[in-house]
Length: 91
Image (cartoon, rainbow, N blue to C red; front, side, top):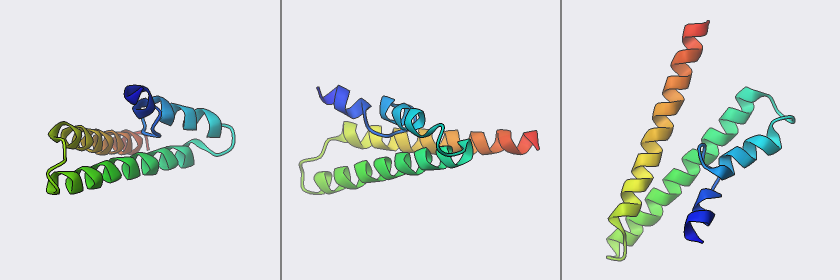
């Protein structure tokens, strides 16, 4: 149940991000859609980091949750920069 709910978060590579892309695909252009998904993914990652930081500070945190949050944030930044570089090479 937890894994299923976690997968529905609006992060870029999760099913929630793909659902947002599917729902908004015909309504806005692709660049704006990528921006919306990137911002929602970034907010999700930062909120996970903040929640876990406060939990670790109160001795209730989980180091795995912190590592997963950092991994998702690094992956998001890497994907955004690689997408920007490929767009610059096309121009």
